[in-house]
Image (cartoon, rainbow, N blue to C red; front, side, top):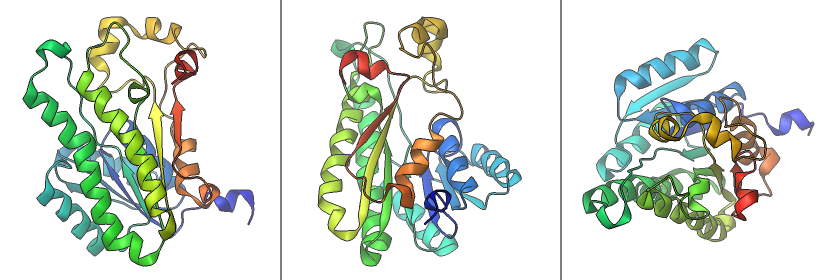
Length: 261
């Protein structure tokens, strides 16, 4: 195969949760531009409609499903509709996530549950459903989880996000454990661990600390941008990454190299 053909996703179906904005939309664009048919999901129909229109304007075959990826009934519906409308799922990108800021001693239990239910319980349920119904029977598939460098170490002093960090640490080991278990089915399971990217989720931190201050702490002296996850995501979900599984790749400008994460 030529090098470029290794990254070709023509004929593949990709399901991307949290795909209406931010990192999820960035990854959906990359997979669609490489030839995949893309189903994006999130909770808000209007955001999804706008995101799908943006993808379609770039020549991408994009559809959408409004659903809550933390709820079992919605997860079942996501899988049902994707299979019905696009066929077997070749690529699953578990990107949907939530965060909550509060000191550990005052962190509301209900907020802890909200973060955990979406960030790890929902990932488990959706991955299990896609695996059983589409990937395992065909003995092939690519699963890409979106972790975070927050799951590789503790909080910096200016952050109080213990539930988020804990959930992303769980995503890291979920990735490794599932890679070992599902390798026999020809399924690869990997994760990206982004550093700071401007997004709705990070807006509060960026406003409180300042983009320049955060960038100063990265060896590359910059934050992530709208292109920085695309190449790494495409590697993990294409034939170029067929011998890579159980790996966590930090895309963080070098921050994790400073901390040893």
